[in-house]
Length: 93
Image (cartoon, rainbow, N blue to C red; front, side, top):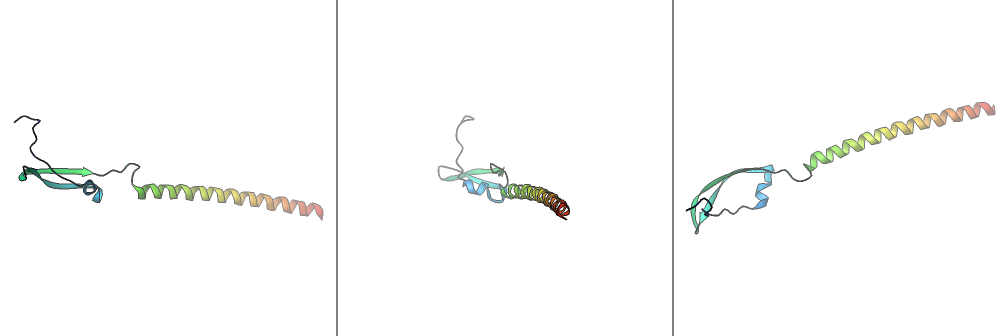
């Protein structure tokens, strides 16, 4: 036997590596339909694009900040219009 000879096979569903953000479990190695040992696999699932909850929370915070800025600008513009209206009314009197 050499270092590159197979010692057996393990069949793992990819989805099992994603549940609970990864796996920490022992899997049975089979060779010629017989158990030939076990392998301990530890994985951490890190989806491309990051965690959706954190991503959505960040977007929501950005949108909230933008809405607050736009509201402040609208309020300042409304006050400016009120002042212009008051000045126009004072000139008419």
